[in-house]
Image (cartoon, rainbow, N blue to C red; front, side, top):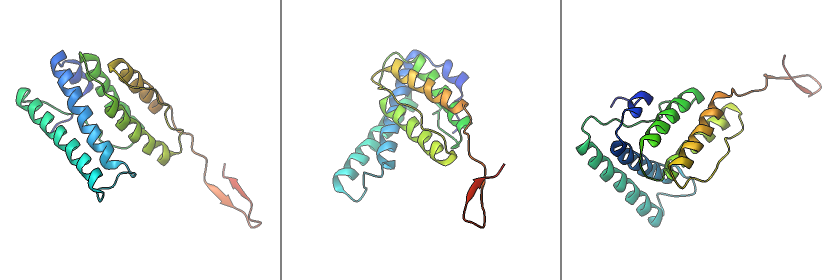
Length: 170
């Protein structure tokens, strides 16, 4: 399936954007549960919650694609700040067009992906705020986009000296 671009998201009708926001949040709810190390697929209760979340997402996606046959789903494609920023801009465009909805799980997914990038590149994690409505979701996406645009400052390679002393290479 082709990726949804920011310009395509800006062309969604308010009804499409509202429905897509719901689909994206349900997908994120399922993925957040699936990727949470504190939740185990071997625990019956966790597995049932995960299955219900997945089924809710699949049902909403089916309904959405039945109504909007050429629908695209914005998805992150790489785990680098530039790509995360592109995806967040697309999500922000969807949320701006939507009339209602709460993207709390979607923003949690965005933060989870940003945290992975931060750990990998040695960058401070992006700050978080509450997300109860579309405007707060947009604010959080703006914060992640700004965070993605600041390059990570990784230390130089570490050189070991005979005395066991370590210094950063110039």
